[in-house]
Amino acid sequence: MDAAFTEEQHEIRRTLRELLLKRCGPDSVKAAVRTPEGYDRELWGELAGRLGLPGLALPAAYGGVGCGATELALACEETGRAVLPSPLIATAALAAPLILALGSARQRAGLLPALAGGELTGTLVVPGGQLATALALTGPNDGDWAGGGRAGGIQARPVDGGWRLYGEAGQVLAGHTAEVLVVAAHTGGFTRSRTLLFVVRVESAGKAAEGAREPGAGGAGVPGLLRTRQTVLDETRAQARLELREVPAELLGEGEGEVAGAEAAVTAALAATGVVAAAALAAEAVGAADAALARTVAHVKEREQFGRPIGSFQAVQHRLADLYVRLQAARSAAYYAAWSAGAAAAGTAGPDGAGEPGAAALALAQALEALRAVAAEAVQLHGGIGFTWEHEAHLYFKRAACDELLLGPVHRLRARAAEEAGLFAGAGGGPAALASEAVDV
Image: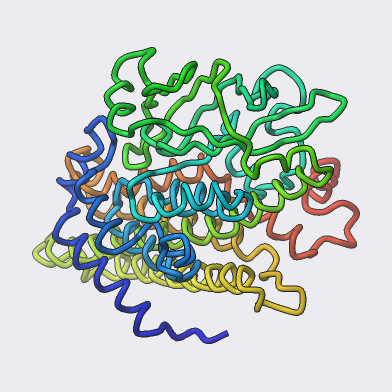
């Protein structure tokens, strides 16, 4: 592994940081999250059109930049530093990789160039708030998380050469504005039970965002689709609730659902997508933690108590030094996870082309833990202003809390990484079994 970044990678970071410093300050973030879309559409258009951000990890043949997971992670580190509200993760780390992996030639040609150029945004729709499970980040994704043939989740049934989806899903990232929905749905009932992926096209993100204000109008022209933006603690990570009532959909891959190995291909694609998404999210958390720590250090240099800056007290210095060490460790883990994901995608990670087992889940756990620690200390060391909504410190604290709720908890991410790495292969069932034995004792 070559740990040094190329000049092109440094340029991606520099260009994006300069743009976000000018266009995405704390006041701009607070204004953007209160728009119907939940982000600045003009800024997103510039990031997509000028920098090609959503297409960084897509092949040039489909309108992408032709880079990989490392470049996407570096971009996410900068967007995390600014706590940028955007559909980047939902589009570039969730929807686009699945379409690339499983879509037919027609679906790829029709969707990926528009996603790469920012003309369309996309997201992954998983029922029951099971995003981390579906991506195999907190456990195997071969279970019945999509419904398992029972009531609940999202069910799919074939109708007149097409498909109809029925069910609901909450906590869908950018789900109220995305024009391309990749929906995980259960089909086949008990006899041929399997989870497949379907594509739902929505007419216009602008219409969908306007419709999200009025119940019953959130589908923007798609019969039976109702999308409602949810109220969440972290407004910079917009989420939505989707209700599907016989919504017309297209099978991702066209006809592949009748092949015996279709579900295995879906679970494998979701797991591979989870590796890239975890690396990107880990880098994003590292960027947010870095910005929070930098703001805190600047504050303790200026804030005076007992006639001297509070940063001159040894107790404060020790706390900041501990945070710096945790941040750097998390950054190294995130970079390694991104490199491992990119090497796996290129087939150069090892003899079998697989990346380091558990690296992505472990990096995400470490990054989320570091962000939570830095954000909590930032609130404390900012004193009386650190806990107020008017101060930017709360943006990082809410991002830390909500990311762990959405993608964690941290101990499950670590347990999954241990399982993938085979650390407990001879311990009679893995970390879960060891935890059960410890309770019995």
